[in-house]
Image (cartoon, rainbow, N blue to C red; front, side):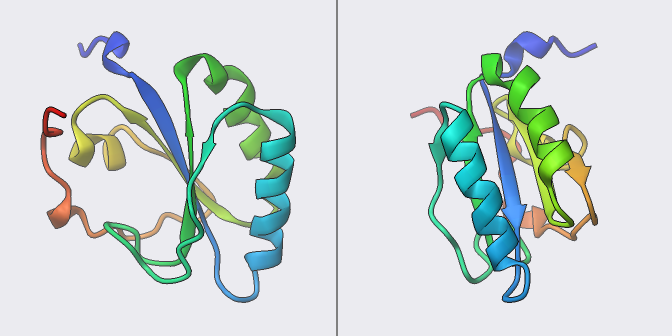
Amino acid sequence: MIDQARIKAYHAHVYYDAVSRPRAAALREAVEQRFTMKMGRWHDVPVGPHPQAMYQIAFETDRFPALAPFLMMNQNGLTILLHPESGRPRDDHTINAVWMGQVLPLVTRILPEVSRVR
């Protein structure tokens, strides 16, 4: 068993394309109005392991019980990857991840197994 106390925070990646960008913007605005978290930049092209345009929502563990259900109920046809930050990026983006909507093929070979110490 892996202790969930290893989870230090969460990331939600909201994916979009040219057609769904307005829905992604509406979701982003709704999240910003309701929650305390760090909104990432818009990435209109694939970046890192992500196969399409997206932005990231970074939030603390105490926000999970409210933010995760909000995303579930308001995804409006968007694909969202929700994953923990446990210090194991490859596992966190794959086996520890939750997908809302379509599961996208991540470029996992670029993800380190263990985070570097900062």
